[in-house]
Image (cartoon, rainbow, N blue to C red; front, side, top):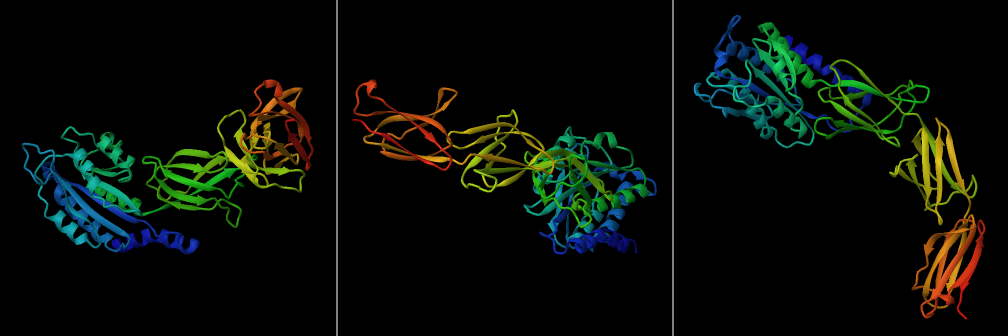
Length: 459
């Protein structure tokens, strides 16, 4: 009866998820649990109703029986302290006794029941060896459950070993069950610690760990507008594993039929760094979840729109771009095409419009739910003709000073340039002219939508 209740209890969230979302976008990940079991000599010690090893064997056997109903689950068993007698200590006494495989619970159960405690406690080394216990898998949750009645006895650092496993994405933060006395201070840095100070507490800890290992939980991300309402939406969110940096989820933010941020189903065993891909992006670091507790993550994300047009509010031009930067910052934030309307976080931006000559606009304001329209003049065309090849350059006149904008190509006789309205000077000398005095200067004006013919002929 207990086994059936545990199965139903763990299955309910998955049934509810399936009903809400229909077909999942990808298969549920395979959960792989590696038990790292202490069979060191100290497990022979008397503890409440029997020896520690006997109690641990019986409780593990019952737990394994309860897990036989789960289809999307694989188990493995690593044991330490069971191969060499102590003394002397053998700090390499650890072995993967039963590797991951479907339907291997009887093999794990039999191996645990036949164990004879003999040796020492090489916890750090055992954790390091688990690197090779998890076969490659693209869609797996790798979980370690360490069951021990003592501390590291071989000078290793279990905390460092655990951190390396998490950093390289080998396994999530381990669970540790300490038998007999409280080892919390020693194992808090290794993973999530459970104190099994009694037989009852040991059984409860095993069941709690399995529930947490097999369950998902829910959260929502509130993207607040300028009035602190969670109305911003339709932007991708990437969830990274904080320890390994690996991408775990991508969600396009959605509001449900009640106008509230949609509920996300995520793995509660991971600490997340969340990047919301607004422009510029927003980041929320070290987001931790709790089993059976709905989490709300909140970011200020008020947004408005930037609309780029040319000539009039009705006319757009393709293949003209503007570099968008945050006001006062040199880094390129976005390159936006004219004719497009793009969403940005509310604030001030600087634009570098890639016309000829370039147009610079600073402190362009983006406001909540409003559209800021940038409408630049329609350009004109300059057709520049040369009778012979030569050297020349084009300048725009601004405040009675010449500003260089373009070098003529010396190997062609005609160029057509799209220029912004304004007064221009072109200065040119043929390759055959041996004196600077033979330079030719031509001044012309570009009107919106007009064409100017510029002749650079030597006579």
